[in-house]
Image (tube, rainbow, N blue to C red; front, side, top):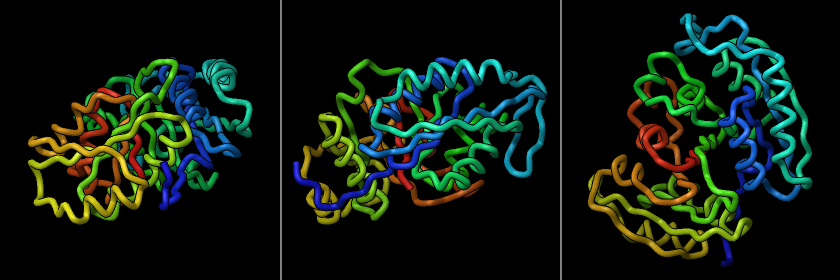
Length: 265
């Protein structure tokens, strides 16, 4: 498949490590998607006060999981074992609330993508307690990979949401690059239950990304995208931040999807 629009977000990767199996899976998936000469920073954020935050500035909430330096160090070792030999790996440990510091680390490293594991929190819970995934989807300066458990061959299949917009065009270009790199199948999904779709623009997006099968779904975009059967769902972000992002299709679908989700910025 010849891809005319070469866009690759897996060149400078920050992967959040807290020692959990979910964070190690995020590192594994980021490694599978990494560009040939990518650099990966394993970012361990020690949460010794057992508090998370709501928004920025932080409002501490007691009762969050406590993440120790020992857990981070063990996580680093496990994550390194999952990464391919062709990537340059470094690690950094900072102390504080996870989501805000993940954003700071991404900016400091000039990251093109942040990878984090989903711990199964609902979107509503994430908004209330300030989960790392929710915070990053709202505030990250770059693309975000929200990983969920997948087979050893990840990714076998990639689905990209397309509505003909510029941000869906960027998502399609990224998805095409990843499919070409990994050998995954790629297809596009058009949700018909939302705003009116201009199919001339949809076809242009598909053609500019090298061409791939396309299907439509009569449901609204969040429902259609949330029920995708694939290893990886790729969505474009309109670039909204903070409270404005709470109603975005990509943010809502990322929380509800059954597979890993890459939100492209």
